[in-house]
Structure formats: structure tokens, C-alpha cells
Image (cartoon, rainbow, N blue to C red; front, side):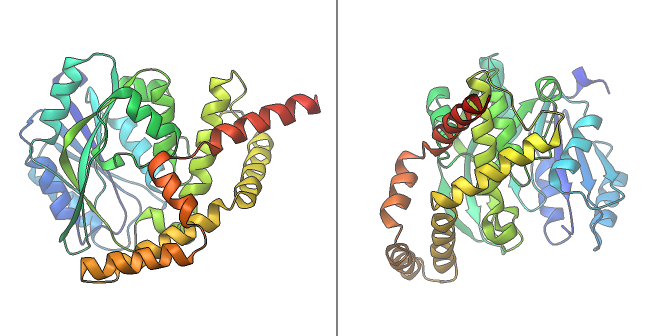
Length: 335
């Protein structure tokens, strides 16, 4: 089929995903939107993920499998899927998450109603590793409110709920591999610079929370480090400055990233993130939700960062924009 005949290409990066892959794949193939394809990218799994993927490929001609020769991470896997995509839109679903049956039908309906949309997400439901539901998460649906959240590092709809126009993602260069663990956030920022963002006020995806989530990598500090760098580079682009993450000179990127890392440490960003992660761990380690909430509150209060954490939770952070201005001033004075 040509790209015009496929409305959505669903990209699913897989690495040792055998425990949840059947449920994730079935949720895509059971969509009310029929004209879609599913690309499973096996990122050099050591379990039977590739065998499961191959079984679906043999059973359903909407499924294709790409097998990477070395483990390269989810962004590289997704870029491989994007290169092979034939759909008008790209839908993301992680291999441990679940799409609701009407997800893509509802998202494309919204996209058709507003041609300026370059990204559509949705509300979500978090669940534990056993599939037990934890909480429903709602997000604004208005473009301006979503951009405000995006720019201030507030809670945003999950990557597994997103659809993008394929042609625009390709034009922007797909995922920038410099942003380890935050490649999606960087792409969202770049998309917000060329079009509108929308969201459906209805949970269209279930997000699984477990110890192997990417957000737990490097002690949970991978995403705040690279996410902050992505946000700072976004503001540099807004100010008309060179984006070091797209500069061919690697030393420029390393210089900026080292400086960002140091400033985040000086601003206690890592300490606050560790305090929040510790409080969340206390909540999720308790079977009783009330007891978990109490434990969460106690850990936040004892962290010494309670006021800053509450302020950032409800009002976001202006730190990336401030650091971008600092970098502009510092580099201007150095010339």
C-alpha cells in the first residue's frame, strides 16, 4: 500500500518486551481504525521478543518487523521505524503500554478538524506491572495551555499517546539522538515551533509503570539532564541563536551540555528530582493508597525541597529559559 492508503503507522520499539508485547500488539491490531500498519522494531532483544514479533508478522499483513543488529536504544529504533513508515501519521506506542480501541480513530478525527495540528495526544491511565490501574491523568486540550506546560517542564501527555504527521517529523529530522532519554521531548519542542498541539480529554492509552521504565535510567537523572538541555536549546532557537545540538561541531554540544549539567547541580535540580523520585517510590511501594499518600507526603516534607517541589508541580519551572539567556549573555561577552 502507498502512504495515502495507510492513515497511521504505529511505531513500537521493543527490547526484551516478551512479558507485555502480546497485550501491546493486540491493542493496536484491535483498533477501530482499520487502515493502519504496525512496525515492530526489535532492538537486539535477548529474550523471545523477536520470535513473538515474527509470529504477528506471519499472521497479519499489517505487521512488519525490523531487527536491529546491535542494541541502540528506543530513539534509534523509532527512527528506523519512521524511515520504513508508509502512513500519513505516525503513532507511538511503547511495547509495555496499551492503546484503547478507539484511540487512533478519535485522534485522526481531531486532526482532520484542525489542519494546523502537528501533534495530538490524550489523557492516560497509569497501571502497575501487573496491569492494575493506578490513576487517570488529564491534560489541557488547548494549544496555548499545552505549550505553556511544555515550556515550563510541567506534566505532559505521555509519548505513547502521541500521533504526528509523518512528513513533518521527517522534515524535522526525526529523533535527535543527542538527547538520551528525552528525544521525544526535544521533538515536541521542535514541533511546537512549526504548528499546533492538541489533546483529547479522554484516556486513550494505559501506561505501565515498572522498574525498567526509561525514566528510571541513571538513577532517574537521565531525563532531567537531557530534558533541560533540550528546553534550553529550544529557547536558544527562539532567540535566533545557534542550536548546539544540531551543530556539526561536537565540541560545541559537549561544552553546552557540561555547562548545563553544572548549572542544574548548582540550582539543586538533581537533588529535587531525587527527592521527588524517592517520595514516589514510597507511594508505589505501599499497597494501600492512603498509606502510600501519607508516606509520599512525609518524604517530600523531610527532603528539604517541599516548597520548591510543590511550586514546580503546579506552576512549572522558568529555569531553562533563564539558563538560555545566561548562555546567550556569556557567549556574547566572550566574543
